[in-house]
Amino acid sequence: QRGVGAGALLEMALRIPRVELLAEGIPVVSTPQAASAHYGQATPALGIFTSTLDFGLDRFGRLWLGAGTFIVNQRTPLPNLNQVVSSRLAGGRYEFIAHLPVQSSHFVEFRFGAAPRLFGADHYLFSDGSAAVDRDEQASEVDMILAYGVRHAHSSLLFGLRSLDFAAKFTDTGELADRNQGVGIMIEAQRDLGF
Image 1 (cartoon, rainbow, N blue to C red):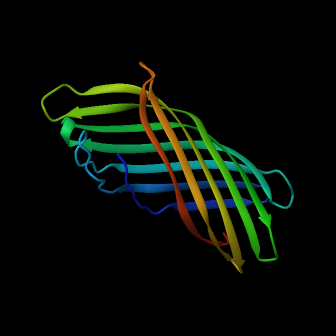
Image 2 (cartoon, helix red, strand yellow):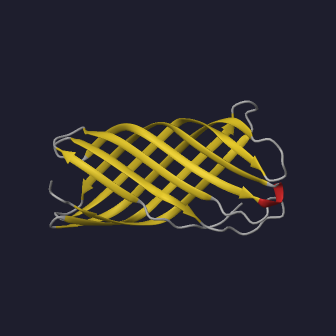
Image 3 (cartoon, rainbow, N blue to C red):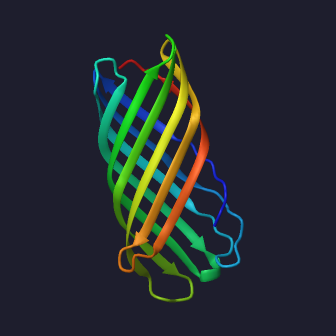
């Protein structure tokens, strides 16, 4: 299946000097894709949640390392196969962030995140009366952001690119279960609430 989808990425961060708690996610979004001869008209639904605790490596807040969790939920109807496949995968996430000033109010931000071992199962429901089937799954995810930002008083605006590389395999056979790759334009607005 190939196609294009769009969704809102919601993010919240709580920062004290040299420590930041970051949570972000894409609420479940579903976008019809072009029909294929094998699967039929699929309309996959996808939701993502990540949360990390990041620690500043320098007193200027330019370099950060963090760890946390990554969760992905998906549901895909496959009408030609008389089935609906859903899964939930979760595991640890690690990230590196570089926030580098260019001028007094301009900066470049680079983020690299990875969840090398995600675990879960694919759940198959059949509309032809067959019994439901569960298959254990293992996956990995890598994402990157490169953005140029402008800070104005208590807000920032970032423009850049974000990439995602997700791969999953069935643990019983080692065969590929899922593969998602993409690069997209990112526009992010940030606002300091000053709590």
